[in-house]
Amino acid sequence: MRDAPKYISSDPFGSLLRLLTLLQGPTGCPWDRVQTAENHLEHLLEEIGEAQSALSGEGDVGEEAGDLFLNALFFLSSTAKREKTTEERLIFRLYNKLVSRHPHVFGDVIATTPEEALAVWKTAKEQES
Image (cartoon, rainbow, N blue to C red; front, side):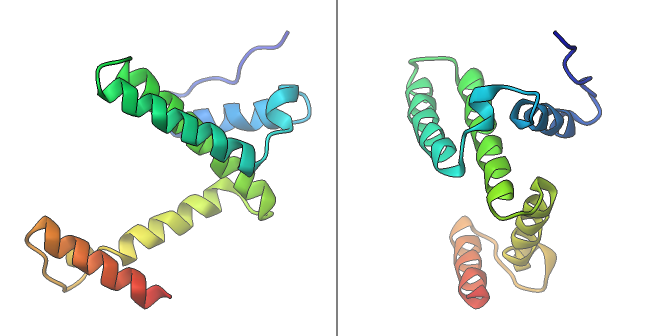
């Protein structure tokens, strides 16, 4: 039995990614190793249902939020393997997408209401295609 990777409180996200990498690695968990993006998507959908139930008062919302996040990270990790890239590159793509779809925050477009912000988001998304 080996020790878990050290949790670094100043980098909780990185600590969690390191743990997931270990679990999915050759000396990690046999079940985690064989999961695919498709499997993780199924688990993610299941966790969404559990999160909805928790929000309705039928469970611990914080625990379900963690489970949902975990399954989203496993999906990200499996997708990175599938696309022969890294989790960090996929996160960087997400970062750039968020910046480009918020020109009302990071550019000269004006949006003062949630409805205007959503319209700006949709326009930015259409321009990416």
